[in-house]
Length: 85
Image (cartoon, rainbow, N blue to C red; front, side, top):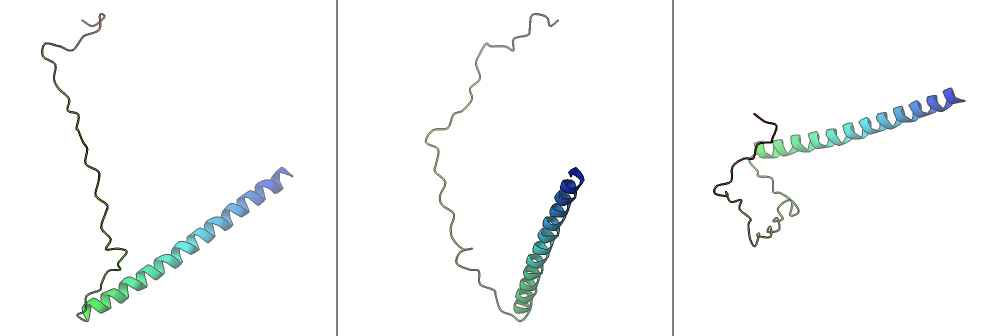
């Protein structure tokens, strides 16, 4: 019974791994074909226009109202432990 469960687990893991690799290959092939098509268009003398979603501006970061700056204390030395020579 244990060997059957282990076999099923490894089989399921293998199927998921193969499906993941196949999905990545399909997406990579589509991206490669898109890049080749854009390259052909650019070699023909046209400029590829970016989608409006890619051109969206980033939201402005909220400016810090007050920045904390570390100050050096005058007269304070590094305290050595009592057992240090």
